[in-house]
Image 1 (cartoon, rainbow, N blue to C red):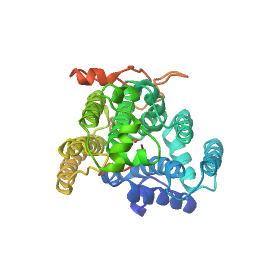
Image 2 (image 1 turned 180 degrees about the vertical axis):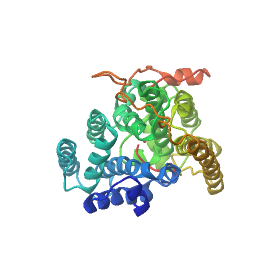
Image 3 (image 1 turned 60 degrees about the vertical axis):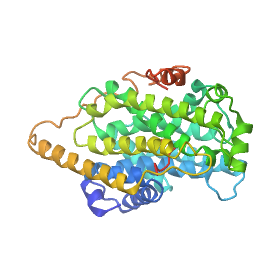
Image 4 (image 1 turned 135 degrees about the vertical axis):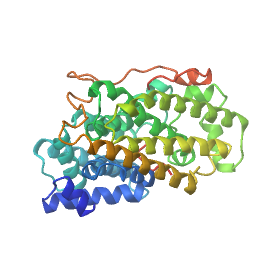
Length: 361
């Protein structure tokens, strides 16, 4: 964490500054695309984003880290993190740096604690669930692992509409990013024993775990797998279309950051298609020149947004962050599920509502 970012955010306590710095290191190490996009945010908001990502990355590493821990050991460590999180959110103090930064961010921005509870529930399910029969089943997982990330981010980003209006699009964007990662990482996830694509979507094209494993282990292709992966990509693009109307709802100075992430993550789908949907055999990567061009465009948009914002100084900031980000009423959740969105995608229609918290490559 740069001193400039921490100073701009008004973070002065040495231990808290160190906690935020650890979150920033996690973001820089594991989330190149996300980290790049975060650099386009107003400097005072960056620490909060690093805290949210850092905590998610920390929990994900407990679940998926390649360090030889047994499932029972991972479950115990996740339980300890859950208790630290509950204590940190309640009291604000904890010995775990990523939790300390997260609790501070949640307090500063008024982030609903249920979003963190739902996230941890999905992390625990990763230790037990290996397949998802339908998209509805998969979305139950993604709500906690991805949709709530978008909802956590919304108060930090700010909006020009009531937050409950922007919330469904923010949730959809989190899901779109995660579906993109699922598609890109099919092979790696299969090595861990998991399949994050709906079994009924795969079955519609004659694909099952056995066929995927055969392709992964032999390095051979199969037209049925390619067709299923194309359908999954179409489903994912439908969720991006659902998320897109939320971009202009954000605070103008936050839009370049999220638009950059939107374009770069969407570019992964293009890279997957350009590589013939060979995700079982190699990782698709957005070309460096493309990443640089998108970043340059984001910088240009940021300059324009800042120039326009400077003309509004002295007036109330153009944000509308009143009300909880989960729909505006106690107990509400942004969770309208279409059972089979991949059927809509295959027909060319919109895939209705449903971050894997990992770099977009």
